[in-house]
Image (tube, rainbow, N blue to C red; front, side, top):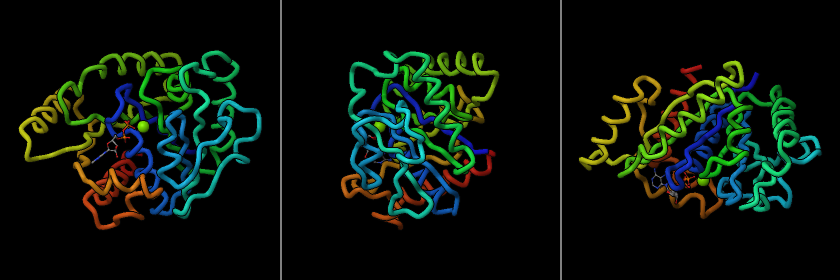
Length: 248
Ligand SMILES: Nc1ncnc2c1ncn2[C@@H]1O[C@H](COP(=O)(O)OP(=O)(O)O)[C@@H](O)[C@H]1O
Ligand SMILES: [Mg+2]
């Protein structure tokens, strides 16, 4: 059975998409069949693996999910592209419980095809995000080493606990990841201390440093492993991948 990760934080710009794309790629490069699902209407993850957004989102449609899965230039890494259509008016919320059931049904339908499924969630507590959490086995929370890093995280933990209670414990805390880490900054170290004191062991030992390769790769439609395989960013996501594999 696949491990299904939802990558969430209602703050934008904290590294959700960068983590979804490069963790997926690292898992695939390790020989694991991996599916990246983009449910953010900005579709940055879709672009980052060299594809264009779809007209309709496969996760809320009725067509079997595998018909919408695209190969990427990374062997063993496939993607369900995002759609810009559920901007603002959240189609999912409008369609209610039916759409949520379909979303979960789609995930269940590919559980045997993939070892890892990574869902890149939008920067808001939308119905899509909550449904994704409900259907996942683990939640990954990237936290940017910046002022106000913890703002909103308590609320997010509340949402996650609610989902865990409602789903009989299928969802667990997969881990918290410190991103855009700069060890030369006092601020980074203060935030690291705060996050580790508060969350303890669920915080990954590995951190992701600020690295220009990570921010440039998506504009070339590439993962960091294609764009700059020797970069610090590529190294960091390889290390994170190993930690994720060990936490199984
Ligand atoms: N470790 C990093 N080093 C440098 N730039 C980063 C790093 N992580 C993310 N970025 C850049 O920061 C911006 C926000 O990251 P992104 O992953 O898109 O966040 P989110 O999906 O949470 O909105 C993007 O331009 C991305 O390329
Ligand atoms: Mg994003």
